[in-house]
Amino acid sequence: MLKVIICDDHPIVREGLKNIIAKSGDISVQAEAGSGSELIEKLGQGRFDVVILDISLPGASGLDVLKLLQGYSPRPAVIVLSMHPEEQYAVRALKAGAAGYLEKASAPSELVSAIRKVARGGRHVSAALAERLAFGLGGNEKREAHESLSDREYQILLMIASGKGTKEIAGELSIAPSTVGTYRSRILEKLGLTNTAELIHYAVANHLVE
Image 1 (cartoon, one colour):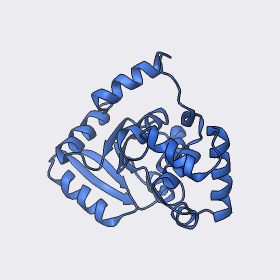
Image 2 (cartoon, helix red, strand yellow; image 1 turned 180 degrees about the vertical axis):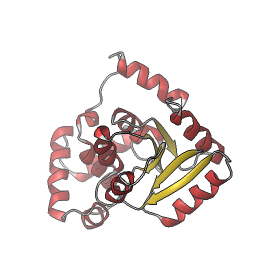
Image 3 (tube, one colour; image 1 turned 90 degrees about the horizontal axis):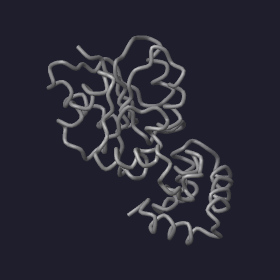
């Protein structure tokens, strides 16, 4: 029986995932967590084969948690499950150590097959993403300006571009509004932009938001 732990800050999402996994017959959800810190704590209390990790968490993001897990032993395989389209976060997640990336709109059967695959040491990605990763690893893919952003800067770029204000972003990330402003300034500088309107235009033009 494969042992899974789910990390998502929405109880209703965790319940839905548990119901899907319960029907598999060979996979069991042994624990759940609502934040990255709670996940790390529970990983120290037992052994798990697979972590299902939301990318958008309060405080430390899923990408931050992935980096923390790099030195964890024994390290479970991690599937990042996100509401964000693959092109927004998948490459960053895989480079940070994830074994798979799934959009929350994926079919339930795909989640179950992904758990089985990564538990065996494989990777679960779409064909399009696999091709993109192959080109990237080969050094043939042109790097876009936003790829120079840190994970936190990139996360805040997407939040600003999706229309969220400074206070809303600060609340979701558990940081001070002034810190959001600092990140915004860094993002504009790195992308060679001057204001939020240009930032939003950049994100739309590069298909980072719809």
